[in-house]
Image (cartoon, rainbow, N blue to C red):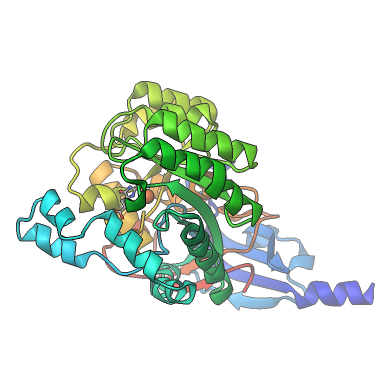
Length: 411
Ligand code: DI6
Ligand code: FE
């Protein structure tokens, strides 16, 4: 018993004198607790609620932190990124601002293929080194979980290299990384325009190899006129199912190919972008429990004008996550706080929806709701502690970071 007590006390931490936004599903709104406390044992939350109601054993012998009235939210979750990439496309951005057309940019070697070339030329170590500053920018704003996609390798070895680099980032920093295999992202030059043959390669060779090594937690695809058709994506999703992996989809970003319904049909964890989704798509997602991941950074950067149908998502009860979509082509964004401001300003999400979108709903979009995303007993002690007077400040400011401390798995 003595040993058990010792190990319990040894791993016991308490954050007291705090205001909590627990984001618990059972609570109204943000699940606000004034005069709250969070107790954790060995990195797992034992108690989150009013300090006065906390059972005594949670505080006895605990390493105690006085939060001096600061706010605690769940650690933030960026549930859609292409964070592992090589180089950048600032040159393309500059050309376009000077009036170059898409074709001129492409002829000058630009576009997604330039990112594929850069990634293929980079070693795994270089990819890790180039991606760390982006990850650090997210972490500096309280991010404790980040999803990272492949999709710039587009052959077996380079897709594996990206996913290994993504996994390594979680060894370099105290953060949870979830990986998604996005083989069906774009057509590599060597495919010579044959999308069907490339999809066969992705579904029958690359995906099983990636799955066999445990490199992916989910499978993603890009369903779009400039990428892959619903029928082609279905083949990739069938292969994902055979490999036992859940799916997600870049859907209806630039046109309505009914990607939302496709995702729902495959019980996708999430469908992402969704600017062109219609009511049938929203209804199908609600029925399947597929989360709508809203990506205002890409909308802003490509100067899209069609907004995702937020009112339909609300009406049908579709859950909404909010993410950066960090990528070199359409969303070179590494601030989840600014992303929330964009979701509110551009799309009219409320403060509560924005905060749920980067915590509880982002966890749901990754299939991690049982482990993180809210301040509730049994979940990982992933916390963000803020120097703010009210939660709306996290959404309201642009380019200001009020993070006081970030706790990942109790540390
Ligand atoms: N949707 C996008 O907007 C990006 N990928 C995707 O699936 C574009 C990625 C890039 O241009 O590098
Ligand atoms: Fe994306």
